Amino acid sequence: MTTSASGDRGGSRGGRGSQAGVGGTVVTAREVTRDYRRGRTRVRALRGASVTVARGDFLAVTGPSGSGKSTLLHLLGGVDLPTSGEVLFLGRDLARLSVEERAALRLREVGLVFQRFHLLPMLSAIENVELPLAAARVGRRERRERAAAVLEQVGLADRLRHRPSELSGGQCQRVAIARALANDPALILADEPTGELDRATSRRVLALFQELNAAGTTLVVATHDPELAAGARRSIQVVDGRTRP
Image (tube, rainbow, N blue to C red; front, side):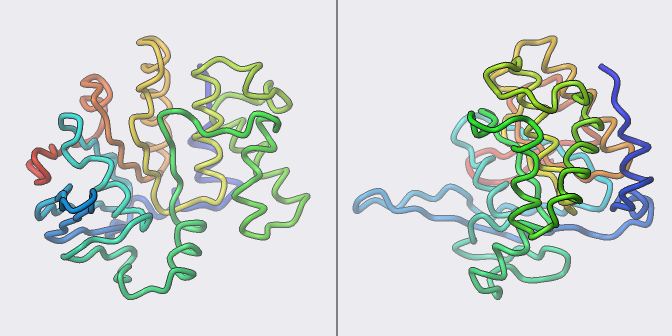
């Protein structure tokens, strides 16, 4: 698979790639816990987890099913709030933001990639990628240009008009990655991005993540895939709701 990650991130889009070498922290979680209610039972998904993600990082979060990996990603991206502890995103305490402010932050600064793609089946690849741009009120012409650029970046310049049913699983995941990149976010969060893919396709997704990271994209990936974890810059474990190096 051939992509143009380096050229696009650091070039025409003028994105965050040029800042990657400068350093600085994107997000920090400090001693976060997260409790849920199941009927009368309280379930503690996280029990004092801590992690810092710097610009240009590529962090793999590993651990058994049910250990709290996805919960930690949700807290890092402002999808959810901790029961205790704090999450600072670009220096802002997420718990102090209103619901509307957190939604705006997620739209502009966080790109989400899911295990099952979550593409709209009636839309083409380029239309799916345009969705977060439309939500951010980017003009029609610019969002079409930016969507086409990120699809080229992930190696799908020849699949712009294809619907998900006309694409392979690996191609659908690359569309999902392009959608996550569309607003040039500070952070990409990917939750089991290779969980539905075969080994060869998973390796292509890893290679794409590595290219994007080399060009300046900051990534945090929750995964059971040892090859994906080994391909990240560093990794941590979540075990029984606690983080370990």
